Length: 366
Ligand code: SAH
Ligand code: SF4
Image 1: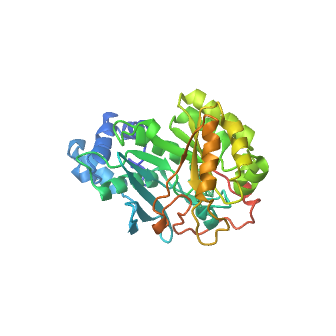
Image 2 (image 1 turned 45 degrees about the vertical axis):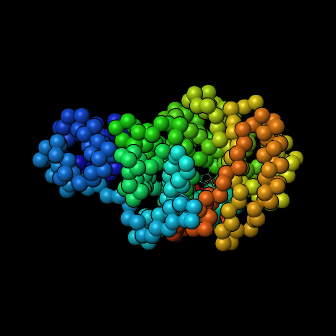
């Protein structure tokens, strides 16, 4: 009999096969189920006609598949869509779809809030409540696909990035499971290059990710020296820049990915000087690295300002001159607070300790 708390959504193929074998079914039932869920968008087991009556019944009763519930939708003037999704009774997470010519990127959340406490981030300011399950992560993709409709039989979502609420590598197990479903040919069928995990720099988990998943990696660097990075991204006190970059280059070698994307939020007068650009060029020049400069997106209670456009251009010019491919990310959806770092959802903070000691208190699942 299937355990009552099992969630078939977001379950990797191998786990599903073991589950079916465990209840006396053939492993190919996993394929059939995945095709219903992901290719045909059918979630009701009673409609999965090739499964056999008693199996359908058991699935319907013991393991019903539910997508997260949408509690609000906002659409930006630029076409960006933000959904607020219930994460339990009183909390909410956010998922954002960003349409661009020739591609559509879905930005998914991995946690309710975030414990990493980066000083420039709205999610970090809200604190942390809990990890999302693989079902809640993959559910965001299915739900967005359903809401957006198919574009001529093809999913409008070509890329998935873990850049919504939360630190994905602090929710390692569920994120790896979700990634395996996203790239599975029987499920979401995305190429591993089109699934990006963005991390603030959890070094041991970067190493494990290389072993367990080979998706694209983005690293939120934001500073070129430890003193400043300690202040902006507190996890740097545990894993300083040199150690983080070492893990990045190992990741590229171990996974045969082309490069790491380094994200750098441009904060006026804080990390945007030409000297800082040159130091960054020194760290990344000649390495498999590209840089995304992100104009800071303000949020209530934020204490920073966005760098001036000419300052961002000069920063980019210095990096480009050092041979580093550098793009300035266009701000999308900021009129509906859907831009990078503006996602806040509804979080009941469970981390009530002062900044700094917070990092010691929270234990992440690895
Ligand atoms: N926790 C992960 C992924 C989610 S944040 C991480 O930090 O990488 C996604 C990106 O948005 C990160 O690069 C993050 O540093 C950036 N970001 C956070 N707050 C921001 C803000 N207010 N303005 C612009 N970018 C921000
Ligand atoms: Fe968390 Fe990323 Fe925000 Fe830092 S930037 S607080 S890691 S969501």
